[in-house]
Length: 315
Image 1 (cartoon, rainbow, N blue to C red):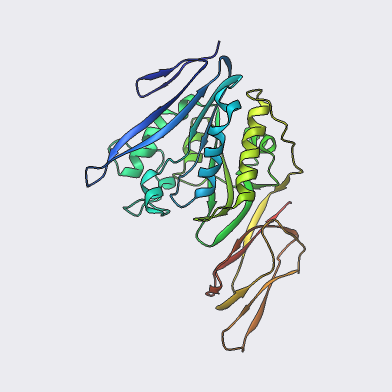
Image 2: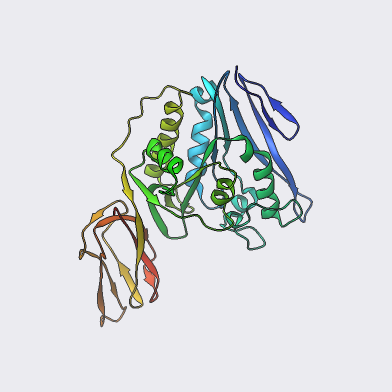
């Protein structure tokens, strides 16, 4: 028999599912904001996995991945283990269609949080106190920033054996070595020995169906590997990128590129061009090394120093 899952005074027994609330938060208008949490608890013992999205309100691709996941009959009838799914952790920013909270804070820079802190700090605290201690590992779904289109990828710490193992099981086309950042969920959870991988895919405020498909397939591979569901999703030929860097604009002007995220490039390849609007300057952007394009800036008007093309290198 599996183990019960406890949250906010409620107990979800093995073999049952529930929708509960992480906590309730009051806005200045006295409007109450609740964060729904979906719990699918299998009858037999197994790992407890968190699938979380909407850390930033404009990152809708991850929200769609988790939405599709919780609609599946095989997830609703888990063979073993427990799935904790939070489609939108940052409800306020989701309603506003913004990356940050109303006070300008980034929720993913508020961890581990405080029960008496800002709105973001209280949400982070509730997640860290209520859910993270009960999981074995989790996937945090993100999307590229404004006008940045990321190729579907997992970001993890290669020097952490468990992180790398989970990245291989998720089996995206690209896995990028990504060190921890201060005050993030990933770092805070790691201090509790709860690995969190970050999935990146697409552009903010825009559906990218390839990223959504790859994100969902990765979740199904994880669940199938742990015998929680039966899935026929095959593994892909994953490329592991040890480091990455941005090719930046050396001058201001109009940015043109025919390269897409996910493209393999060779050192010296022309990645794009910057032209001024008066026909006087045409400057090529050159690949600094052999690798893969993991992200592209879609903004046509750029300034000197802007990050334009993100290139990952295998070794």
